[in-house]
Amino acid sequence: MTKTIAFANQKGGVGKTTTTVNIARAAITDHGLKVLVVDADPQGNATKVLAPKHQGPLDCSLATVLDKTKSTPMSDTIRVSEWTNLDVVPAGSDDLADVAQSLVTMKAGRESRLKKAIADISDRYDLILIDCPPSLDQLPINAFTAADAIVVVAELGQFALDGLDRLLDTVEIIQEYTNPKLTIAAAIVNGVQNTKRMTHWRSELGSALAQLPTPVPVLDPPVQRATFIAEAQEAGQGLDQWGSTKASVLHQTYVQHLTTILNSIYEGGR
Ligand SMILES: Nc1ncnc2c1ncn2[C@@H]1O[C@H](COP(=O)(O)OP(=O)(O)OP(=O)(O)O)[C@@H](O)[C@H]1O
Ligand SMILES: [Mg+2]
Image 1 (cartoon, rainbow, N blue to C red):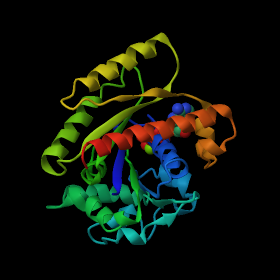
Image 2: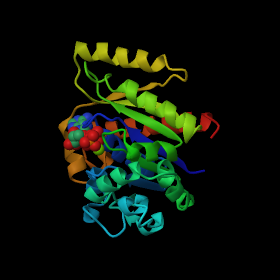
Image 3: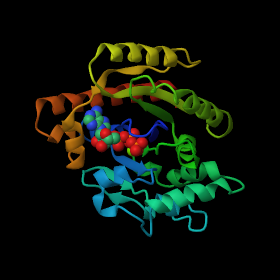
């Protein structure tokens, strides 16, 4: 059965897109899955990495799927990516930002437009990954309504926990009103530099998430801050293709994290 995972944090630049891309890579190379990445961020960063020919405004994109005046079928938006067994729904750039705004005034059904669109194509894929924007507006709300699970991507530090409560509140509202089966499968820590401070903040994050009614595990090991991660992404290459031992080891970490996330989703009985 197809599973849908949203990568989320309303804080900008914490590694949502990086995590989405590397988990997608792990899913096709080692898990042998057929994967769709839905770029739900008007910045279009996942599109830039995975399907660079389909950046910017387009006749068919996530923007036109969600636009109530267009309602493009999801199947018309799907683009083949640079990687075998991975397809992409491009964001549609600024149009997606405009559409997110227009959904605010839509009277009914606005939270479920993405869920409905995904339902039409989900049987073509094993795994659907949604790269969320750094906000908690109608785009992540649509993503959370469509998803089986959320993976929180977090950095460590003094301000890292600040937005967590709002994210968790939003998830609770979605669970109550639009998607009772939604779970938070895990948190992945990204961009860590090894210092004593980090140990402190890692434990703060762990305790905050362990205290939830359904405790959320923080996956170990965390992803370090390393130039090769950004370089491989800019080159559109998987970490397994990058040719360094550190990159291969990190690729395997993502493989392991995906196993844990999928186990958590399946254990949830969904
Ligand atoms: N572990 C890391 N080491 C080095 N560079 C990283 C790492 N993680 C992310 N980056 C780089 O930092 C920048 C921000 O990362 P990314 O785009 O994944 O964050 P994001 O949460 O998706 O951002 P946004 O909120 O803007 O969508 C990118 O240029 C990315 O290549
Ligand atoms: Mg991003």
